[in-house]
Length: 277
Image (cartoon, rainbow, N blue to C red):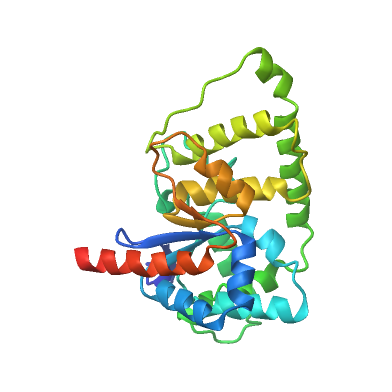
């Protein structure tokens, strides 16, 4: 959740996931589906977010969310705005949040650069008018307006695709010298997901060619599985994450046919958390 607090030099930003919160990560298809379909499910998800769930959000989300145009774009914006300040800006990619000192939770992978840039952009867009630093100030839909006309993120997406192609090219080296899967270390969940998903990609590289957007999907899989408790990924990445060595402390993953169940499980998890307080 994003909040404003008084500081000695003026307002300061506070970004946190409460210890009793429920971090949720949504791949872009899930955000679009929740925004456009099944109004009752959308309402239940929004209510759950306001009841204690927190949406983990990175620029990896923004890359494709600025793709929908006109009515679809507006629906996504309205959905994100309805979440209020209950979102957490996390690192853009697993390549920038690998854990040299141990990143164990959403709080440790918060992206101060993202929220600071967002804050400054919102202030600049006020054109000198008096603005209210209330919950509405941090409506997430504004992020889409901010980057909709930028060409930086599509370039980054292409760069991630190219990184994945270098993984594919390691297949012959892997065949000569296979490496073992990494066991789960709760102090380094993203490293665990990144390393073992990379191994799966190398093994599958003979039958799977890297397509446009696969690099961003890899980012979704690592960040969502490592730092959320509940995550929605596409079918292929759900299969890959669920194939990682067990036991592990990764998120429970839901696919495209499981959004109803995901929302129900979020509601049940929140009730369980409330009962333990």
